[in-house]
Image (cartoon, rainbow, N blue to C red):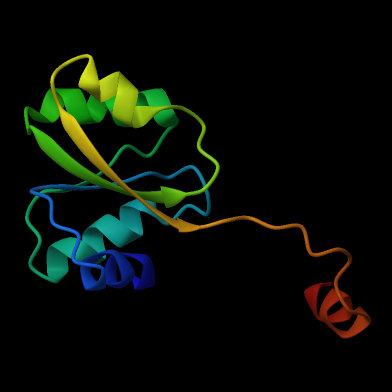
Length: 110
């Protein structure tokens, strides 16, 4: 939900919100939270990048906001451009290697 708030605060506007399930398993939960917040067209592909593109094509909606990380499994914007759909991408995070966890964190995770 924080990612959704960040996109909307930046003035992002799109008719549809599309969430992927590729990173942390939050796609479906985030889409549901957005629906509860009043956004009607919220989808989650619950699969890989191609499944997300297929879902977007089947929706028949012309414009999408794709909130995602810096690294992507595929080029959703280009794939949907082939079928005349427009995607506004919002890169909201970047995965970074941090090294080993501190001993206290590693112990708590056991």
